[in-house]
Amino acid sequence: MKILVVSDTHKNIENVIKFINSMNTLDMVIHLGDYVKDAEELSYIFHPLKFIYVSGNCDALSGEYRVEDEKLLKINGRNILLTHGHKYNVKRGFEHILRRAEELKADLVLYGHTHCADISNINGIVFFNPGSCSCPRDSVRPSVGMLKISDSIDCDILRID
Image (tube, rainbow, N blue to C red; front, side, top):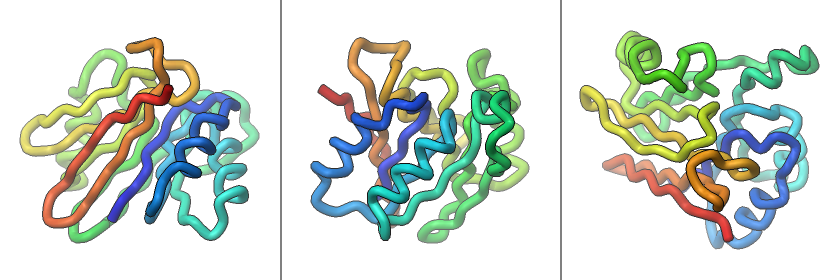
């Protein structure tokens, strides 16, 4: 399964649209919050492509959307935790989100919030942050994530020109 992972679009979906249009095959898009409205608009534009999304701190502040801030998916036998990350204080480390991942027996955690792309493996759990496709804090170039789940979990960070 080939999955595009995006986060922190903040009302700027042009890069995501360009990226999806450039893809030959894609099974799903996961949006990790900030903003849910962006995920809904992308879902409409690229229907019937499957979109799954969670809300972020900016969504909660707006009060407009009542979308879950956390989801647990099972894909190809793998437990995948989706969260924006703000409720787990990911800007300060993995302690809280690791505890939640272990509690849920997650194999993979997809999170955003920091606007910094990262792939880490902690206690056998993969933590994958695609960075921000609109306003990165770790690079001058926005990024998205590409996730491939088969017998293994393969994560790649793709920078957008």
